[in-house]
Image (cartoon, rainbow, N blue to C red; front, side, top):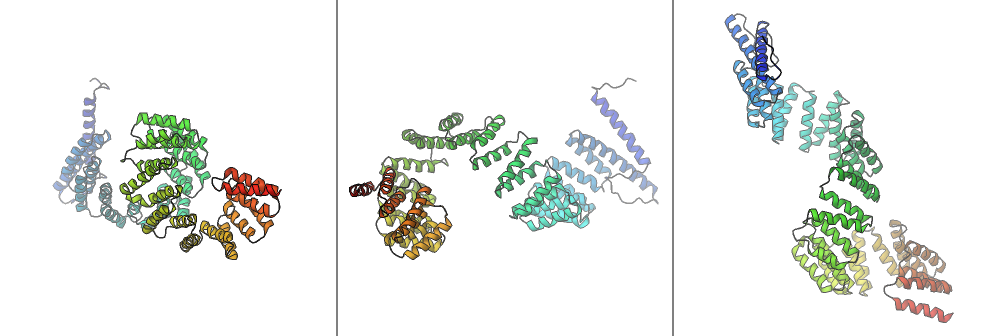
Length: 586
């Protein structure tokens, strides 16, 4: 007889089936007790019944073996057919029923999976594999309560079953039963302290309930046990970032990159850390590497453009954004930032054209319209600017608090202080305790010349926020400037300085207080410090000139006034008068 050639698959399969049949017969004579079959005990008194059961068992096992072969070759339908034949010969095998349920689950025939698993439990209510299969099916169907019930049934029989404890803990985690999840995971670790997944899930659960130190401990244990566990390393890195431990996060991410050099998600996290650190060159390096793997990713191109923007390489940023718009003309994020670059470059016409082209349906529409209003305000086209913001108040009323602030700023720029006050009061009618708007109201009343009302609004700020350094400084400076309540003024200014040490404007207030009290040398030293902290501020420089004048340091006073004059947008006439007065005296 000739041997079958390697290409004759049909003959091979027939030969294999013949072997399986022969093997099944051998098992029958050996009275083999198969792992799948949990038949009733044989009654040795009835030889005919015994023979029939042994024959059925061997035939069932024969079909079971064929089913296993089919499954191994990916022929799930054929495997199911063979298992159905097997169950005809061995109707009392929960193992076969659960195997049928398993293969139906692979095909996502979950109803059949449930049906066969329940049939197995009718035969043996404590059959743990049937409960396990039902637990998996219910989990896949997102029926978490039913899944939990099945897993609990397993634990009644096998209270220390690690796989069940792990599965149940994940369901508790998903159902926000975090304490129960922690208890189960710790019971796993009592049995196996170095179980990777138990440590990992415990870390995740602690992170979820914001017990970050515990989470950190278990993430570290996880990566000690399995040093190249990417998910654990990644989540540990994110936790490091959250806790402000960027150096540790970078070291961890670079470890991941060492063995997964193509991991673009980690590259992006590294890029974002370096952006936070204003190390834009390093961020650009990672984004550029990402381009090798994500050549067609438009969002990545926008991110690269924004890095160039932060580096003040506006031409490079423009080039990248224009590439994005060529690829996706409806990418309004790219259009918005391109408009912002033109605006900052003072190419207002081009900026206006781009912002006007951003549609109302875009998430960038509101910001584009606000930028348009700012441009119009800068161009003294106040009616256009005001009209845009008022239109937005109708279109996006949920943003009215923000829009009221912008509208008030436009009125303030136009010195329409009463209109600005009216607008701020509209904002405060919706949020009466808004610190930002109460402070702004105080400033506006001061600009209107109503100092008493200004102080009243600032005191309101301190009622809701006693540690507000700006309000403390404002009140303290106003008292000092008016020459009243100087002891209270000093208290307020010193409180403000403790809250914002090294602030040039608060230091100026203290120097001005000394000036009003006649402590001229202390005033001069303090104001010299203030000019060092805020070297471009004309009011602080003018204050120093006033003190120098009182100290008879007239040449120094002239130099200070001249410096103030260079930076002063307003009040130039008063400074010029002071300079001329000293020159006449000299």
